[in-house]
Image 1 (cartoon, rainbow, N blue to C red):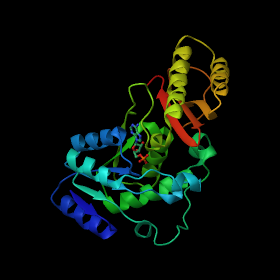
Image 2: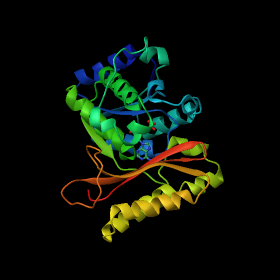
Image 3: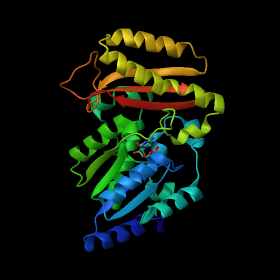
Amino acid sequence: MKILRTKNAVKSFCLNLQLNKITIGFVPTMGALHQGHLDLVKKAIDNADSVVVSIFVNPTQFNNIEDFEQYPKSLDSDLELLENIGVAAVFIPDNQEIYPDKPALRIDFGSLEQRLEGAFRPGHFNGVGIVVSKLLNIVKPDKAFFGQKDLQQVAVIKRLVLDLSYDVEIIVVPTVRDKDGLALSSRNIRLDPAERKVALILYRMLSYAKSELFNGVAWLDILFMVRHEFSQISDVRLEYFELVHAEDMSPQDSLRVDIPLSICVAAYVGKVRLIDNISINH
Ligand code: AMP
């Protein structure tokens, strides 16, 4: 496995593959890898001849300095996992390599980012859009792989690819969960055992809300119950719990079969902000 630290090294590595008609699958990550990331990598290995993974904790997508500074890092074990699974190259740029200057460009995804993560993390999707654009321009992959865990991010990236005519296929991979339902996240490592238990409320409420929707209960009544459940637990602060169109993120208030629906949630458990979502009918 090649370890590449500069744009030029990645460009020449990838150009060589392209000249030899070897297709490239790309998995961007922020490291602290877990089985969710590895599922993306496995999917990439199954769908492309050669796989490139990037590890870069992107400062421009953090609106909270503490979250950025506390972001978990485990580079040595990340590299071992990627080597064992069969990744061709890992791109580990430093900040200067990606941001030789502060970007003047701002990417505004309009209504796609006005709710959910976009509303609670101002500037987040601008940072995601800029870094993903840069990485796609450097790697020029045939296919790029993203987790359904970050549903709004998937919507934003698909829009970025459409609007800027990137020649890449976006492949979405289902959320990997622990046995008890907690969605894997690099941030889970920051939960103490009690918080880890409390965090199960996210998936429990998503599952509950989904089954109540199918039982014919009105969304507003479900929401009332869910908010009540969250309010009962002192260590948890709910930010949002929304039924949305799974592709354009528009808010919905009833079960429909003609559009793809998901429920998205974000909550703080102690000092750790967690997100999750569940698909309803797609
Ligand atoms: P991150 O390192 O958190 O930026 O995530 C890198 C990629 O892994 C993103 O496309 C995420 O959506 C995806 N990802 C993170 N957690 C999971 C999970 N539990 N299951 C599937 N994909 C995930």
